[in-house]
Amino acid sequence: MNNRYNIAVIPGDGIGPEVTKEAVKVLKKVSEMRAKVLGGSLHFAEYYFGRIAIDNHGNPLPSSTLEACKSASAVILGAVGGPQWPRPLDASNP
Image (tube, rainbow, N blue to C red; front, top):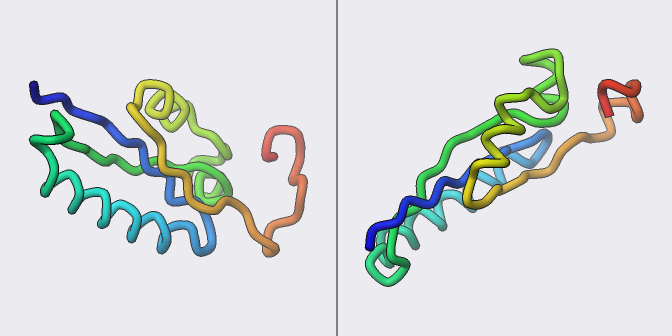
């Protein structure tokens, strides 16, 4: 059986992208080495959440990110927010 496991990767803000990048590297290697034992393979796609999403889409949680996370087999979430952004921004930008 060859299952495809879709992993939504949300790098986040600050150190989040650096940390999630390394986590994905490890999981890709595990997937390559153990695909037969795992009964499938891991596939990764990145999505925006947090301040990076506000900067790029005007929304902290774009609908594309939410839908991808709902349909994913798993989600990797990096750090979100940071001291450079005031909290809370407002009700629409938590």
